[in-house]
Length: 79
Image (cartoon, rainbow, N blue to C red; front, side, top):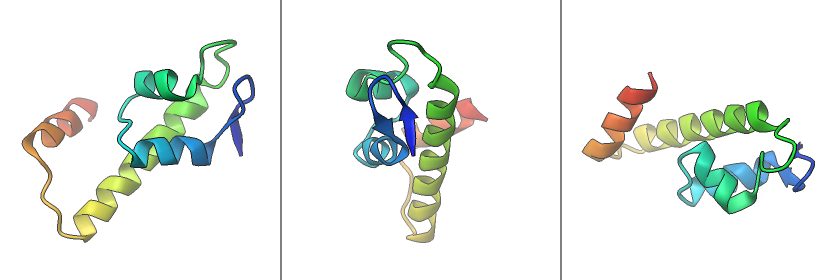
């Protein structure tokens, strides 16, 4: 689905950016240009970002990956 109409960014574009390392709303703004014009997509962008990050963490956990200390700290900050 299209999340940002102004920049024609889909939820898949956001998920791909997260998979490639984007970790914050600000990074998505810089990389994809979301919420830089009218801003109406900001809430939806944040929701997709949160979902994509959660899926990544779950995938890493099920694969038995050990999270770096910095990631543990970031997760603690968001809770």
